[in-house]
Amino acid sequence: MNIEELVILAKNGDKNAEEEIIKGLALLIIKYSRRVYICGLDENDFKQMGFLTVIKAIKSYNPVKSDSFLKFVCCSLKNNYNNEVRRKYKYKFETSLNKLIDENVEFEEFLVSDINIEEEFLYRESLRHVFRLVNKLSLEERELVNYVYVKGYSLRDYTRLKNIKYFTAAKRKERMLDKIRNMLSMEKY
Image 1 (cartoon, one colour):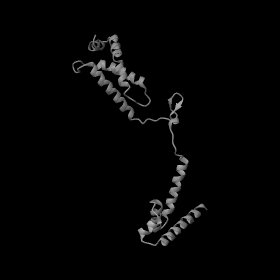
Image 2: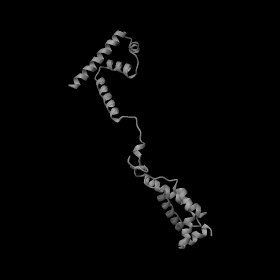
Image 3: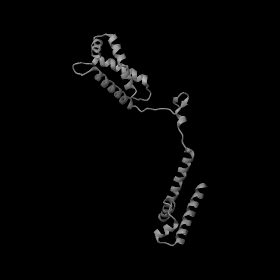
Image 4: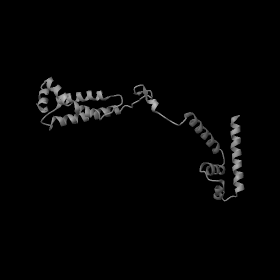
C-alpha cells in the first residue's frame, strides 16, 4: 500500500495506518530533528515534535490541494521546527558555568584565561588615577606628556616640534614630573 492510501485510511480513523505512516517517516523525522538546536532540548524532544507534526499533517492533509503527502510532511516539519526555534529565541537563554558538558566535566573547566582580573583592575584604576592627575596639569605640560609618554616620541622630537632648545624641554619635563610627584604625595596623606 502506498503512502497516499495510508493517509486516506488514517484520516478515516485507522490507527494501524497512522502507525505505519509514522514508522515509515521515522528516518525523515530523525533527519529533520538533527538539523535543529534549541538550548535545553535534545534530539528526543525534536523527534517527539516531529511525530506530533506528522499526526497533525495526516489530519490536515488535503490531496486536492497538495501534490504529495511526503512534500506536505516535509514542509510541515520544517515549518514546525522553525516556529519552535523562533518561539524559543524570544526568550534569553541562561546557562551556568557549572553545567555538565560531558560526564563529570563542567563547562567552567574548558575556560582558560591568561588575564588576572585583579591585576587588570588595579592597572586600569592606576591609569585612571594618572589621567586625573595629568588633567590637572597645564596645557603645555599635557602636550609634553601626550607627545613623549603616550605617543612614544623622544624629547628630541618634541624640541623639534615646538622649536625649543633641548635644555628647555628637559627642564619642562622635570618640572612636570615634580608636579605629579607632589600631587601624588599630597594624596597619600
